[in-house]
Length: 325
Image (cartoon, rainbow, N blue to C red; front, side):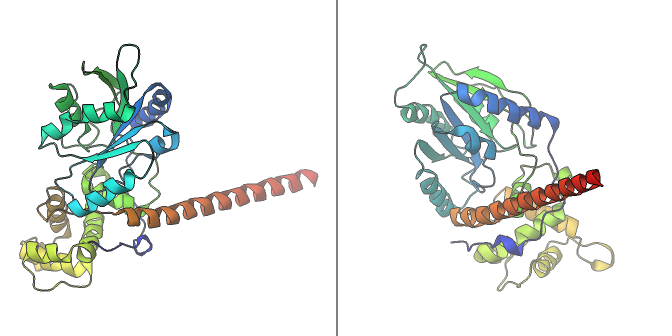
């Protein structure tokens, strides 16, 4: 099982900055629609269930039933996925299920899961209304199309395909309110930023691919050393990610001027092979990681808020002193 990847060892990610205007509106719309729906279906990336969870949903869900759908489970470490399923289902009114779009029967079974979660409760027309949400490129639109039995939502390998909220009546007792794939304005956890970039939730043009690939290489060396040996036919592994990237860069012929390793080329190789599970079935976080990192993140947020309050107090004191003099 992968080891805990200590968040304090990772430098802050300086250039993930992607928050299109439609996402701001989508978050506002979600806050408004939540009180009107019976159930929340949150589609998560099975490789990063913590980092792909929308904090807005948890903040405003209250006691509303929630179905956590771990998509792309065929790309994730199955042992870690089971840990996440067990973790989510410790909470009341929460059901978690792992799916892959390669097995549509798993997706079609979600209608029955929703009905069971609601315990037979419906509106006057016999319907359950569910908000379905997820980060960009998590497979939400493919899931909707499979449930509907026809193409309703646009799909693609690029993030931000769906850009407005729509109501979809499946005519089987389930009505979906589809919201655009959204991220949040500020990613406080540096590790989560790297995971989102590595998974493909953020457009490649909005991130430093070398930075993301090097983070990934460091994690793979620590958490999945045997997979790295197997994939790159290595007897032993170096201690540092740069040396690892040099070795596999030369192995793959990713060379530039003077025979030096072209980090842009080998970074693309590493990222693409992770995204397609060519490296193996890899998960980037465990429930233990999430709990440890959340403590650090909340402490940092509280410290920043305290510093801002102190600064504001100082400005107010200075203003009042200047006013008296």
